[in-house]
Image (cartoon, rainbow, N blue to C red; front, side):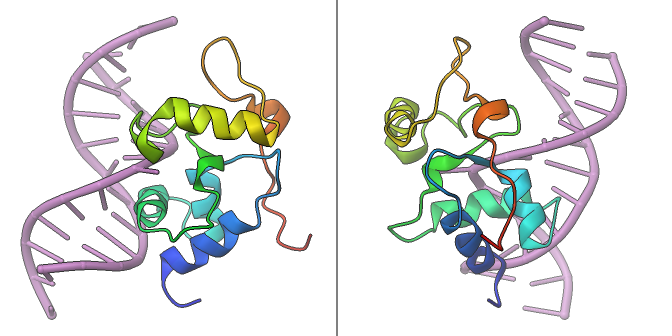
Length: 104
DNA sequence: CCGTTGACCCTTC
DNA sequence: AGAAGGGCCAACG
């Protein structure tokens, strides 16, 4: 792990099924709590096999409506993982917000 | 090496 | 409560 995106990939890969994480949370775990934007950029360049669909906004909303080819696509993937959605169209962070525990 | 850009987040109007 | 603007850090040209 030398570059920031690479560290981000490792962290996102450690997100368990049925759990979600925020860009800010991942950025903090990566070593820069304010580099949330770098995390998003890294997600776009992220290779296949990376559960980037488990990464959401700080409020639980999806990234930018066009990620993964469509926010509804991400919603379906999250539901398949066991994630519950609120009537507001946001993910239930209080139920699925992942803690940065690398020890696992 | 310096400037620009970006799947974000926070503060203020 | 909703909308707008600025700031931050790291990669890329």
